[in-house]
Length: 78
Image 1 (tube, helix red, strand yellow):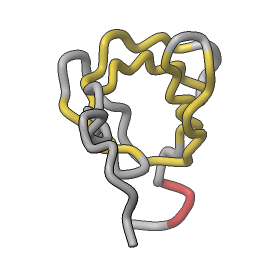
Image 2 (cartoon, one colour):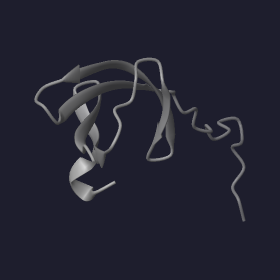
Image 3 (cartoon, one colour):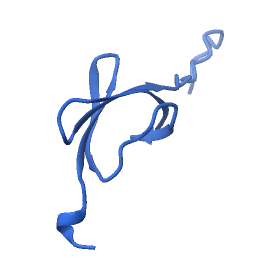
Image 4 (cartoon, helix red, strand yellow):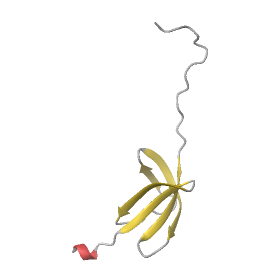
């Protein structure tokens, strides 16, 4: 296999109309595929080819629950 045989795509990963990542890859992700971007788990909602090698991928990331500080603790820390 030669370098000229490889097909490279520019993938734009988008969530809520904001670009999360632009990446050069050899294969296009499929719909309902589980992916991990920047340490966040997500699922591919749709894949749209714009040009021969440009692809838009809409992604839905899982919500991250952040730990809330305990409000009832009113004592000063020393």
